[in-house]
Image (cartoon, rainbow, N blue to C red):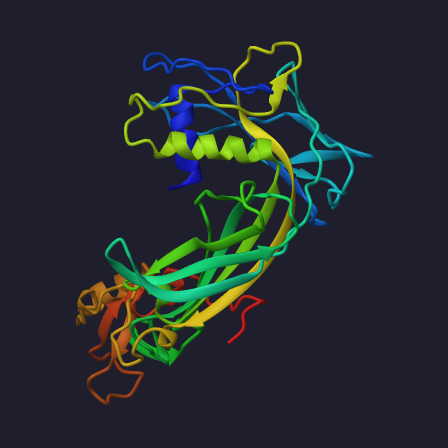
Length: 389
């Protein structure tokens, strides 16, 4: 379930009202009504925070539509001005952190209209307890599950939202020490100009993960599934890391995201259980009837990282999953004209030179597709600063 898909569903049917209470609105299946979309969370992290503005788009058009030219401010004990760094993306000029006991309000002026959120305060903080990685079978698929266990005996129920950033190390199908170049129509071998065997890829989660301990005696989150990595995925083939971000959110924010989750998970948008409404905490000052998608929240954040290796759960002698099946790494022997063209297009890599001829002579060259040798097709060859082996 992806957060982006959730908003697309909302865009198509405009089943939204951003008011302080939940108001029912029938789902409409015909016609299209534009609405402003506001996304933003300010946390207790000292950083430059981000607010995103866009407009809904019809199914027959390409979207989303960034909303530019807005005056965006977050007001607390002081006023924080946000500047547009790219279409629809507004970043605070200064780094700041939300503080306890302070009322914060989002204020936006755009296209002659003024919008403001309800006042929000920073919730209590709650640290992540333990992250665990275990090999399991989930819905018939073998893989590794990363789960969270959070024990915080405070006697006060909390509402949580989770995000994660996964980073994994992987290798290309083949290890080669030379590159092939063409000089004056002659194929020559040179030492490799860059690292192409070991790479890293980083992905931001799109899943909406929620937890609610309000009905429990202890503020505990137990065995919450954060991510599941299938054993067939290349991301599990070497070393894998997951950074989990835990947001303690308000009850109102939890309700907002919970409805968003249920609305987007409905197998049939026109089923009897379809709620047909949506709620937020942002309104047009002069037009309370305007439909607005989004929620402005103040949240406390904690983070934790976990690592594991392929051999922690699987036989190291196994054939490990790759981005490219070995069967797709066909070795070819192109004639010189085609070879020159393939090198110019960065489409191939040297495999071997079958005859021991001097490198300054034209010679037969065996090559394979670039993706079989060059891991930068799928990631970066720069090791992340946080990476630990």
